Length: 253
Picture (tube, rainbow, N blue to C red):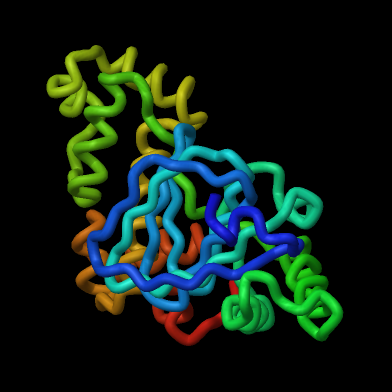
């Protein structure tokens, strides 16, 4: 077992830079994680959902949750691994959380220390403050329920490859080998969303990832299927509580 997975501390840091396109295999860890990157976008897949994690957010992953990670752009990962007692401060499921400026600096501080940091020094107070910030961190709508049925998975794969795909469910049904009624039922049953809701959520998470990588709102709008920047901006604001320009300025919703 690696040191950061069994260190005798409530939480430890993990620092690693990854090139664009790097992807891990399916794996799990015996400790909970807070996956965070100061640069680049991480896309994490579990059995139940797909998560997009741009800078300013982190992904809480409970212990033993099977997942894979893919990097968009150069990713500078600065993650935390939490012992079971410390992990009780976090959510009970895999979810995207906001990383406040304070939590960001605390993560970087932990990551700059040895895995076995001095438990009698100031790092003990830093660790306590990290757990406090994790407890109060708001969640972010950056997950997309996974589609497991093979027919539904074909639709999801087509849309993920091209979020601007404007075909309706009837047109997708031809390629999926299922009736429109069956696909509509499967979307509701497996994802809790309608086809239109699922596609909109996909488009918004993809938009946020692209904006975080520095693409212009106009280019992003076209890439995710909006005919105009104002229409894209309205949908983005409805989802995230701010406009794409507001995201760049760091405005709250």
